Length: 195
Image (cartoon, rainbow, N blue to C red; front, top):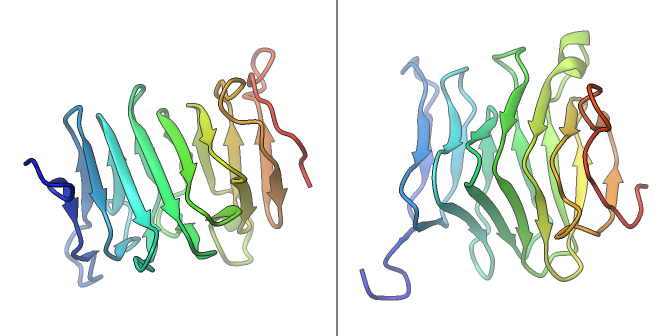
């Protein structure tokens, strides 16, 4: 395509929860794909987002007030997942149907005009809810005044090299934030403030 929205999809992607075995959305190819509709992928362990190659943009800017909910996210080294938002709505990772930590190995990029990007991991009050874990072993990248807002009772583990493109704040509202993998010197990670 040659138009500005040639690689944009504005429809909804929804796992309807009708015992369909789950819905995995896989981004392949080296180019950029933009999704502007509602994305709901949290019905079971087979419902998740997989950024295998290239760049996937979840665009919540302007009038795109869509929701993004996934059981978890995974991605390969060299891929990029960008959340572009102008609203304070959240990125929700459910972890309701799996107890295994999941790893996004690509770059997580935070853009848009909203000051903070809220990532909510798991909900509930059982011991297993608190143990649910999303790993970001790739780098964090942010522009403008973006910062990372961790919410939800689950764990967010940052183990990648974010030293060159993320020097923003991290706000910890609920749950557990882990920096480093506990094996070596930990993540090469810079943040202005953790509060």
